[in-house]
Image (cartoon, rainbow, N blue to C red; front, side, top):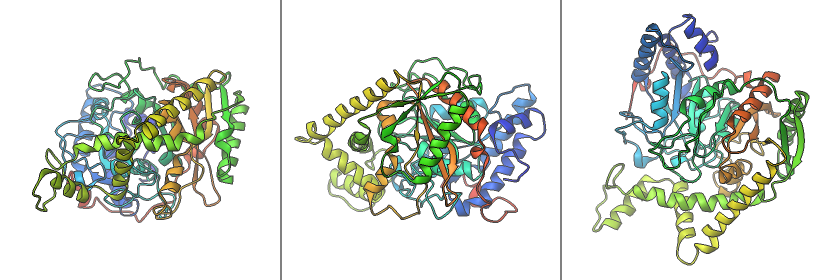
Amino acid sequence: MSSSAPSTIDAASRALAAGELSATDLASAMLDRIAAVEPTVHALLTVTADRALADAREADRRRGAGESGPLLGIPIVLKDLFATDGIRTTCGSRILEHYVPPYDADAVTRLARAGAVLVGKANMDEFAMGSSNENSAFGPSRNPWDPGRVPGGSSGGSAAAVAAGECLGALGTDTGGSIRLPASYCGVTGLKPTYGRVSRYGVTAYASSLDQVGPFAHTVRDVSVLLGAIAGHDPRDSTSAPQPVPDYVAALTGDVRGLRFGIPAEYFADGIATAVEKSVREAIETLRGLGATVVDVSLPHTSYGIAAYYLIATAEASSNLARYDGVKYGHRAKRGADELLEMYRHTRDEGFGAEVKRRILLGTYALSAGYYDAYYRKAQKVRTLVRNDFRRAFETCDLILTPTSPGTAFRIGEKVADPLAMYLSDVFTVPTNLAGLPGLSVPCGFDEAGLPIGLQLLAPPFEEADLLRAGDAYQRATDFHERRPAEIGAASGGRSEASEQQSA
């Protein structure tokens, strides 16, 4: 994006309201930016150029008729598992490569109502299963800070699109860290709301008791605007909580005096990178300097989180992905089959990638006769212990502060052959999902290679306002969120042919 174009939702909204630019001009500039950087970043699977310009013209019309709003005319990107009426939704999988939904997800409807402009659908790990974005059937997205490295997963395309200036905000989903980890790796702000805060209607399921929709942007203020637009009860989602939605932007007072931050020793154990620990401990001192109180807390079952998560999540995935059978929609194998089960096997063999197959096998095994009690039931008991750890910790503090990840973005291909090492990237984010808590990742520094480091803040259920208040106060005192990657690729004189395609 040109240096003169706004890089935050707040700045763009003010410029639009003042008549300094139109939504159509902003959308056109964003599409040109996408054309310039997509060959390098590959953050998007579908660029909705025609839809974006139509949305922008409608936003200009609404503003001219006297409407206003912080998202009216703002370019956004959606992770490619949000159903979008008339626009393909692949979930990063060959099995849904040509699937075009006939309806919009609830979050998509809410953003459209707010006047947001859809510029594209973001790349992702297939069916949200991954920590690096390398499991996409359509090739990995790349980290704008270093294209040789991963952007994190599974919402890596959404985070990379924000970091690369291809949009001003994006939506992703977080099942075990899939918003917070990419936010950390890409140097942007990402929020996983409380389980049930945002409707999952129209969002393709990975693990239904863990999945949650959330926003990405450069700043906590922008994330607060996005959360305010998408949060709220939806009767079409049985897990949607009938909780009132606060004014999240009004909560951004810049004041953390009186807030107690708990520091769990278990999140600063062996294996954490030196630069990560240094940056996070400096962030603790910054918050202390702003008047916050810092206390020690313990989360003793943290080390069991990964094992419990990869039993619960894969068991739920085994059930959820059974619907992809080549009968109702999606890919169907052309190989001949003498019976229905054989057709299922051929379809799934062709349509699913290696990581999805691995997780289906793990989940099916955990749920099978003779193993259910030993694995799935025991994992659910561990989940209760993890939830109780947080409940006790929040009796002595308001928020918990940790690193988002033990390290920074690793090189593409570095961990592909070692699934366990890949899974451990989520060791600090997974417990939050097991407990259903809200979690925020904000940039807090850079390592010796110039790669971003994320600070994670956690809160009790439905206390996003305190979480955002603390993150915003930290960002007012630091400038890590204002730094951008070096320019990517060469400037483009116009949109490419690929950028005009709405679907494949």
